Length: 480
Image (cartoon, rainbow, N blue to C red; front, side):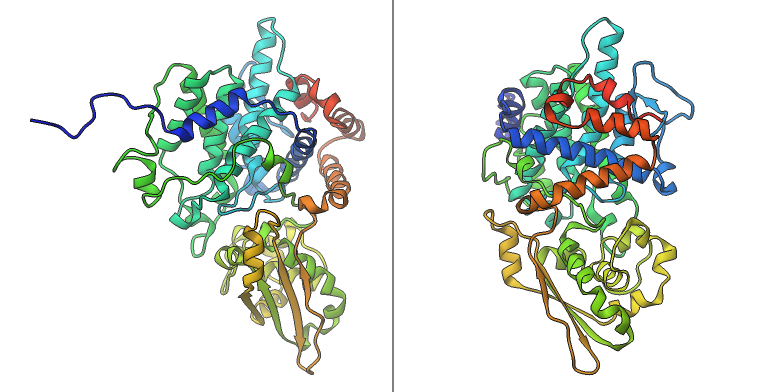
């Protein structure tokens, strides 16, 4: 009697092999990628320092068992915590992502490649302290920057043409995959160990996007990345201990990722792995707004002087946007918490029109109690502009366009303002980087003395200098 179950262990899926070969063999030579990685690092750490001011975030931080300190453990910037690398990754990743205010990647799947930094920094810091305790040289920050470039690339290239949100999955599955790959490499793992770790990341049950969408929008979206990057570190540690992998985790009939979770479709990969994602990553510089709304808020802030004295005379507000924004941030009705509000296009535009700015505090309950916000939301008409949707997906453009126009009861109107590329776009790097650096300085000042701020700035001033610093020495500067 024959059986349909194969008797031999198959070769691993090519997706797993390509990731492992890239992490092990690709030499990052792009000066622009390293320079951008430096800006991503300081921006992410700065956003984490700002997040410490929010009790909803800080209550989640620290060891699992209060008071636990791990010898040679990884430090959590802005705190006195010293933790095992898995819990440290959760802490750092949660801090970085909490306010949704640093780098972003938009494609068929959107996400935040800096989410991987929780795992990368925790792993590199723990390894450095452990190595020094055994008389060995610590890792240098250039290794962290290289790991960042590779994690950004894995997450970003997989996101280019593969939409996890369309099948109800959250983009942090890609954070787990990328973190597992590069952290296995940081720990000294070889090709098989990386393949095993990445396969384990795909085997995991993947998070649903329901916490990002009405009617369930909630604060888990702010710690989901910390959870994913911590899980990636755990799976890397398991692989280094010799835990086996699952070679056809993606392609196995009936039981594999494609059949179970991706509607039977294989991943499409449109370009080889390199340093493309880091070189083209998007920064959130002006506003802590979901990135699809950045240009809409830019337009609203510019319109503020024309409308602030006439809010009671507004008849309607017309917003033209792109399909991705329509799908995830076009919201009507009650908004129940800050996580709901910072993913509502109408809320963000209303605050911009009323206040001429948009800050993290504008999502809190006290700010949302302003009745003018919901009054303006009720007057908004949001529609898709097909050209904006096409340009959003065009690899030569990758714009994030929005248009805003205000109409008054007396028949007058403002001009329609159209913004295609937000300040953090790679097409506006020269304009945006000085603002990003000033944002970093503002965030340092929230936690540290003038002398400590100056020391951190000095050590972060350029890639060559930063790259030679021991990871633990750099991170120690962020301890209060």
